[in-house]
Image 1: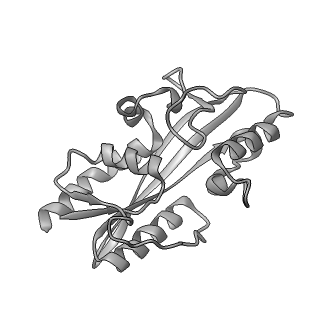
Image 2: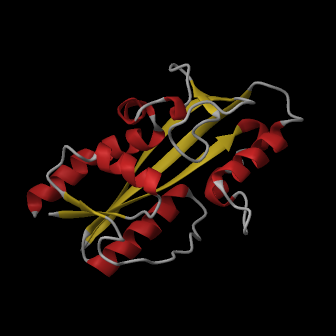
Image 3: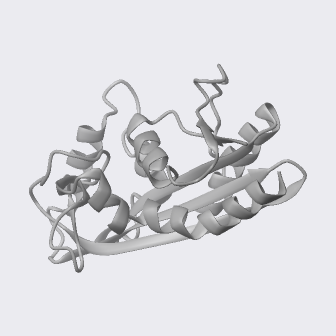
Length: 199
């Protein structure tokens, strides 16, 4: 049975493949299927955006599809960048580094500690079945300096409670024990096993 991971982000793809490696699914990506779509994430929640992506790719491919929507919510910024984490900087200057720089610039005048959390909603869409959503959160504190050489996005900015390090300081196997995406995917795995058993 094939499982489509609905992402074009290479860092996210690597994490998901590692998290799902123990399942009996054959994991495929949109690129493997030559199924490249630009989906406008119009939902006003992570859950809605994850469902939108999962169902769009599921309908186009006919395959069980897993998609996620993820964001960093900083308390001092009233939850920003939140849903717009991946689009915090637009245009030709958009990059992970530019988004991190904007975040730290906005925080510079705010009193510390800069508490925050990463949120992830994972949606699993299967033909003819109502889509299910699973969630994960990890909490910590934003630092003034980037820490770590692994990961992507905002991983290098938040030191996780209980870990004492950023996600970017963790190798893949350790990150996949701590991260918000790992928690959401782990919650989804029993459902994926159930779907595979019905195939």
